[in-house]
Length: 304
Image (cartoon, rainbow, N blue to C red):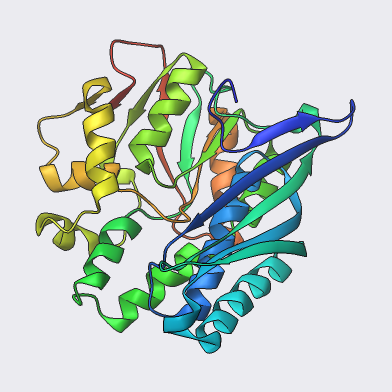
């Protein structure tokens, strides 16, 4: 809790620590089954970001029974349980309430060896930064609500959000890394700034290396940004320095509030290419080295 990490950790013994997290939200796609998958993947991600293995999950569901009916309810829960099974996690219960606004997610418990626990406060000067998923889900989800997104893009973005961070987490533990966080509601720059602050370092990012969905720039230029992105920008803008050449819409993408985004991993420079190659061989093809950790300066993040 002291470092505002992705999940809570409680040490049980010298060999085992519990990781606990909870997350749920309103639908971001129309497909009920896909929404269930995305919500489950998002909740599980915090355990992966800490380098842990999720073991059990409990459903959290708010559902308007009078207006939506059981078919949609069943599809959401089926999507969630399928993703839970994919993660080799056991669903052990949950809680539901009749609510006017639909919400779904999970409470997740996992384990990690205290010696292998990853936090957002371990980044070291000289480390390289790897991002495992493309940015833009918040902006594209806003465009979906406006009816401006093709079926192909909806499918690609949904697949990205529903993809577990399990493989990336396992690979980074095999290689050995210094710090990690997952990119969700505070956007890349919000989570990166927190990592820098807690590690007492600064970060230098290259905006041209950051993976993004190819269509997101057009939507950002139209102003289709979620409210969370503007809040991120307002909160962190004074601690982040952009090069004059970076356009406003690219800044918005870097602040974009993500749903079930990728991992931001800090590791020694001599291990960065090895991890990147293994990620790509494992099918995480959008992963990229996007910057490095530098000595703490006046700004938490400098972006070229």
